[in-house]
Image 1 (cartoon, rainbow, N blue to C red):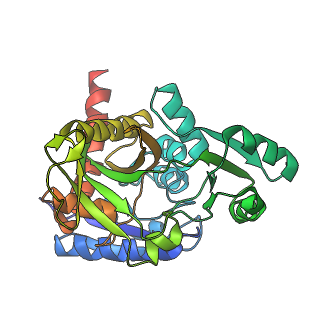
Image 2 (cartoon, rainbow, N blue to C red):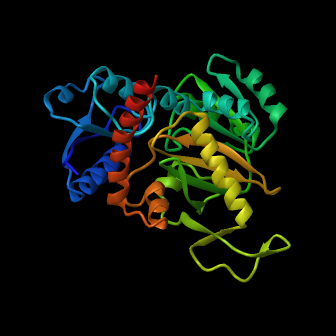
Amino acid sequence: MKRKNVVVLMGGVSPEREISLRSGNAVAKALADAGFNVSCIDVKDEKIEELDHKEIDVAFVALHGYFGEDGGVQQLLESKGILYTGSGIKASKLAMDKLATKKCFIEAGLKTPEYITVTEFQELIEIQHEVMRIGLPLVLKPTRNGSSIGISLVKDMNNLQLALEKAFEFGYEVIIEKYIKGREFTIGILDDKALPIIEIKPAMEFFDYDAKYKDDRTEYLIVKTTLRENGEAVGAPPRNVGFLSSSQCDEAQELALNAHRVLGCKGFSRVDMMLDDRNEFSLLEVNTIPGFTEKSLLPKAARAAGISFSSLCEKIVDLAFQSVLVSVDETIQK
């Protein structure tokens, strides 16, 4: 295969800049090890004028959050005629906007937690009345942010105002969602196939930014299928392994694939979901550009499927080229 000139876009202008720099550096090293000609751009504005001075076959987008996952950088790259990895403009916008994502799930008949939306222009008393309709506990999320930034679990109405102030730092609109107590899972999608399931077991009750990036006690368990009797796993589960029945695994992976497809995602993504005490899965969100460090969850799921980090990054670049070939094919057929 001809060596390709890949530029890795990382950093960015969102609150997730530091995480993106870690992702981008890991991707650049992996692609260089795989034999690509790799250069990096630390994105610090929305013009990225450095793109005009490089020979580029494909841009590997390792930008998280605003101007990364929201379609902004994808639109810029398309205007410059530069091929890029991952989902296109429309799917990126939908996935980044949690409200738009939820509407897509509901229209497709995919289960997601009950929710309301509120804005910073509403009075607290009005928001409290709306919250009472869903009932505590609740999760507050900025509609357009990632990495669990600005998110809070509210168990007491007295804590609602503080949680709202925290979320409104990242936008004027907030989703207030019914909290689902249960097991949390994430499923990577690669080339329209579901990767092995990972169970997230935070040391704290709630998987927020600190649990995700600062607390070393959070566990990430590769899920295995097992024979079950009366709904319980047979025998004591080994350490660092999660269990679901074969039918539950199939259901979760199919749900993740459906979520990926409903939003129109391409190449890869990572889908988060909960399993409640009634053994029902509910979709939380789809990440079109999940973390890409050696310790991130998509690479972890790929390793469980026998795909090294270097091979994963190489596959994502190849999928970008394949998508162009498919588009050309479809145009010729028309």
